[in-house]
Image 1 (cartoon, protein in one colour):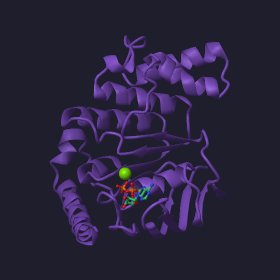
Image 2: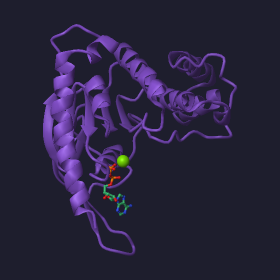
Image 3: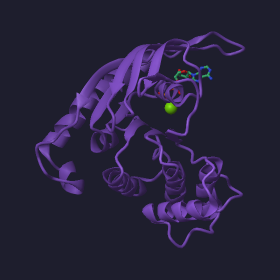
Length: 262
Ligand SMILES: Nc1ncnc2c1ncn2[C@@H]1O[C@H](COP(=O)(O)OP(=O)(O)O)[C@@H](O)[C@H]1O
Ligand SMILES: [Mg+2]
């Protein structure tokens, strides 16, 4: 089981110079096993901080974060992370980038070659196995990053604005691909974004964060009665209503964030 729970999580950054920054305060949130949860909020509200705490990249100082009932104590291969800036090895090919995590996992060679190829195909990069990241477009690089993370088959996928650097068309294609991948192999996903439409399109629930110090302001269920999919869903009244509601929540917080910026 890969349910996630945050209880009264608080985080303060203490830069060596300058004042401490209270980034998160009293964050409590549950993500169900195999749920796709979007974390939505204005820039600087602590979304990445929350994800890095969950990833185990920064220690939890106050409050508790558990995964499957166990406290997070550091990074773990069952929590795969995809960043906004495709952290690929530039000196490795597409195949080698995907193989990297499998080697680290200690998977035997024939098995990992096969697995890498499966994931190359899953993200539609067949024919580009021997290309280097510099030879690929932004969308393709991000697909490699996703394939590399998915190939180790983490139970939980953490994504920090993974499509933020892509143009609108590529982003729309990536949304379709991500949905298809999730249908094939459902996972618990925490997806950070400041894009309201992206959140509504992808998530089962959207947790809206307040301006810094980040808290959970409201959780919105995304369920549609219409059977419309893809472009059609985007045209429906209920889709527009969700966007409207979330947009207002985020806008209020973005205004507050502007007002409190020192
Ligand atoms: N290493 C750091 N030192 C000091 N302040 C930081 C550090 N990292 C982030 N912050 C501050 O913490 C707040 C939350 O940051 P972040 O989690 O990156 O927000 P978001 O991802 O929502 O844009 C911001 O005000 C940011 O400036
Ligand atoms: Mg961020």
